Length: 78
Length: 333
Image 1 (cartoon, rainbow over the protein chains, first blue to last red):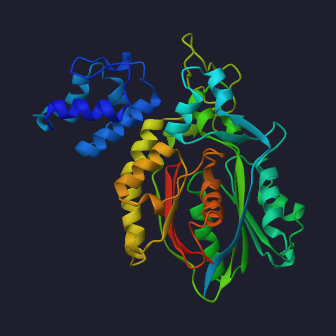
Image 2: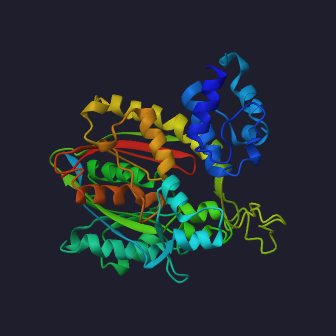
Image 3: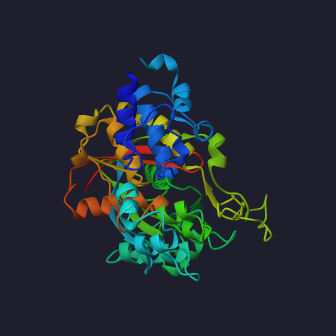
C-alpha cells in the first residue's frame, strides 16, 4: 500500500477531527480521539488491509504512527 | 424426529441507564458518540435486590403463558450470576414456576455463547428421548460485576433474561452445530475474585491516582482489544464450518442473528463475512449487550420486525467469555 493511501484510509476510518492529516510522526496517543474504540478501529484496519493481528499490548507500545507501520511491516508500504 | 423452538419471550429490569447519564459521569464521551460507535442508547439495570433468577422467573412466566406447565420436563438455566453457589437456580425456578417435580433441571455457566450451548443441550435431551419440552432460560446480570468507575463496561452491558421453549418435533428445525472452546483466553474476560480460588479482597485498589481503572479482581475485567481479536479470528472460521456441516452456503441463509456484542464489532464481522445488511441483525439500542440473552432477544425482535418469518432459515452464532463459541442454523416455526 502506498504510504499516502495508508495515511488517508486510516485518517478516514478513525474519523479524526483533531488533525487534518496523518504522517509518520503523528503521535497517536496525543490525538484527542485516542481511546479504547480507536484501538479497536486500528486492529480492524490492520486486519482488513494487511490481514495481520495486532495485540493490545503491541498497540500500547506504539507512540508515533511510524511505530504502527513497523508493526505492520515496512515491506507492506511503497 | 427432531426439535424446534416454539416460543421466545424476554424480560428487562425496569431501571434504565441512559447515554445522557453516562455522559454526565464520563464527559469525554457524548451520548451521540456512544450511540454511533457502540450502537446503544439505553441499558436496563437490575436493582440491588433483583437477581438473574428473578429476571429468569419473569421471562419464564411470559413464555409459559398459555402452556400447560405439567408438560415442561426440563429446565436449563444459563447464568454466570447465580443466587447461590448451591442450590442450583434452575431447581429453585422449577418450584417457583410450579413445574412438575418429574422435570430435570440444571444450571450451566456460560456467557455470550450460552444460548447456542443451551440449544445444543436441549436438542440432545430431546433427541435422546430424555425430554420433550425444554424451558431454556438465559439470564444475566453483569452490571453487578462492573466497577462504578468502569466507563467501558458500564456503557456496553445491560441485564436481561430470555426464555425459550424447545420442543420435540416430527421434523428437525434445529440443525447441525459447530462449537468451540479455548480456555487460554480466560484472563481476557474475567471476574477474578468472588469464587473459591480467590475470595473477595475488600482492600483491593481499583482506581489509580490518574483515575484509571486497575483491575482489582473484585470486578469484571475485559480486555476489549483481545476479545475483538479473538472474535474476528474465530468467528469467520466457525461460520464457514457450520455452513459446511449443514451443506449450505451463506446465500441459502435467510437471516443471521449473532451475539450482540457491540455495533462496531458486529459491523466489522458482517463486512468480513460479506453478509448483506438486510440479512443481518444489529440492534442493541435499547438493551445493550445482555450476554447470553442477546440472541433470543434478537430472534424475538427480528420476528416482530418481519425480518424473519415462519420457514426462514436463520444462522445463530454466539461467542465470548471462556473463550467459548458456537453456531447453529434453525428454521423459524
